[in-house]
Length: 454
Image (tube, rainbow, N blue to C red; front, side, top):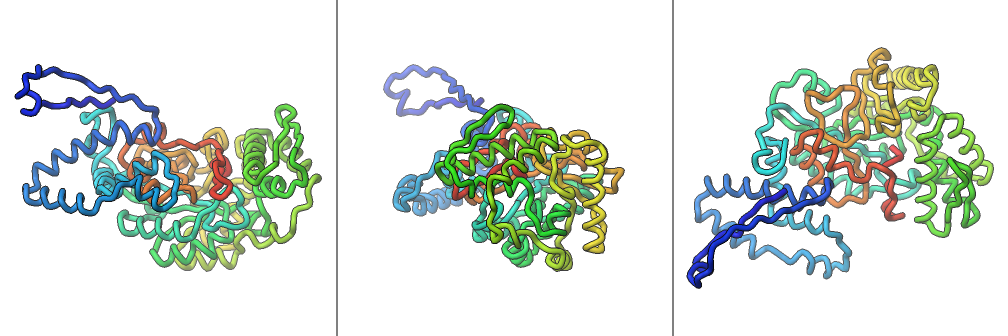
């Protein structure tokens, strides 16, 4: 909620107006847009008070004139570019132009929101870290549900290097275990081990000296094969008919009349299989495989090999385990779950010659990994990352670290804002306001990103 008064001035009182009081009540959903419209004005008001208090009038006047000279109407600029920009993007661009984004970033490094209104803003007393989650850097081939232009990824890495302390997972683990200050930091992670992590992302990571962690699926790298979820997307892409009848929880008919509808159908099937018992998943996948012959050129050479893994490792990248076959741990028998946790660790260690200390849960939501979080320590892991949204402070469990999901459908202003938002808000608030899209939604076939397929 935001309370403001209109104020009174001579242009009102000189004409005999009677001064009164009014309150504007702003109510918004717990989303990014809601946070921007309600909470950000409060932060700006607080910041302006402090800036004006310590800034000479001549400096404030000069800055105001400079901003007026440089400012362009955001909507007009969008029209000139022929772009269709939604309200959230307009807000993000306006913040970037006005310097509000930089101000928010600086506030997020020292303050945090623990409640509503100005009184809910306090100085941070503990460190806080954001872990970014990527899958690939590329726009063609597998994975079909995720696309990111290399130019966008490089812009993000350049921004991180210029504005934040970029840390490895090991460094964040140590800071969370033994806090030494109130610093903030960012870590970059990749899941699965797709080839373009090596061909496209690796050169950029080296250029900006980003110590990324890559969580690989053991069998995918060992055999050079795709995951069952990637095969589902490919199967739906090449299915020869425009309707698919499939028995899931009930008889379902999927419309496949366009590229977009095929991505949506594949996403719905994967989401259902992800919540099914493993034998049910295998049964339905086999049924789909019997309907379509997948082209070999779309299957081969899509994952990294061990030589590429070792080259990245020698350049400072860390490698962790993402299980052996990317099955949903909470849907497995105990012995199968233990195999996924232990065999993948042993394989990566044998192929790289280094200890594997870090783990990433397949799909990554609490319902996906269940009690596996309590077993990781016994298998020799020091940390594990989820796909639950949020930042991490000293109270975070090392086996349930939150991450910020990133994809090619985000602009740079949105990327910048999401990081500041997670650092600024406490973990509970951030999880509630920044988790939009935590269920799979494919909005644009050219920018498809199924959050459900982590």
